[in-house]
Image (tube, rainbow, N blue to C red; front, top):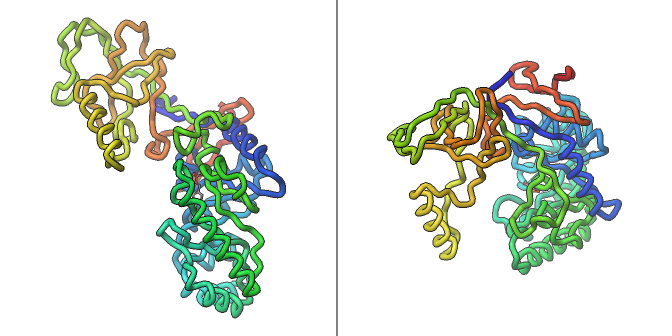
Length: 394
Ligand SMILES: *Cc1c(COP(=O)(O)O)cnc(C)c1O
């Protein structure tokens, strides 16, 4: 049995899926965004569990991610949201993977590849309305429609855009983006294009703009049990499927004044117990996104936070839990070892500690255990690079 592992509760993901579904007016579809390995939860397991619940649409960022889902037997529709490379198109088209297109020069190449493979290529037109990343601008729409009309092997499956400020209180920018999107879509339709799936909402917009749900919403964050911003907390009944756990692998009682860790940054203030857990920054533990202030108020907050941290007070940081009680790290987090000052909490070697480990930063080598229908399954390496759930119950 591992001393460090992650439990992913697929029943919680399914619960979240059902909560989101319940807020959609049929026939609006729910596209499950499982990019970045389903935000760390495991794309194959999450997608398969959702497919069993009736989810038919999935989204990832790269063709490589989409191909893994296909190889693992996912039959639903898969959209690749990000820009893709020409050398992967033939395989994607043959596997029925749908591609976002955002550049005019791709159209004739895609047409050629689709003609060669003998399969229709399904495309979603990415429209640039204010994110400033990828997509067709208003000036390109006439050329886009013309290029598509000369491409009989390409089929437009949808058109989408992405909101930059969906999670912010001020709605004017999102409204402006949406108006632009609608204008672009109607111009394309006026030029004779059929657009079966119109979709603009991510998690934040799904919650805040029900009038923008259109034919489909693209949701990732909420499926994983998180809210896109603190202001949304509680607006939906979500369950967190993610728990990282480590076992205590070393214990010692120490007198007051004992130094702990590199540079002896910690000194015990009283007689206490130190517990070692086998997790560190190489596992993604203790890492946080770099704090770059987004304004003066934010700058003030960061200064307060860092000053408090200097005095050993970590504001806003999630605690480790031992028997349900919060415990603190002692000294610097190591590469793969961390020391905890557990005070007077009675504990033994092998005891479980729940650790706050950011799912998108957690090392993929940490073993995952999946819970489905109340039973636990271990994920095992099937072949190099591919992982799937072992059918064997543990
Ligand atoms: C990631 C992503 C989503 C999902 O966003 P969440 O906020 O996680 O729901 C939707 N659309 C696009 C284009 C994305 O890149």
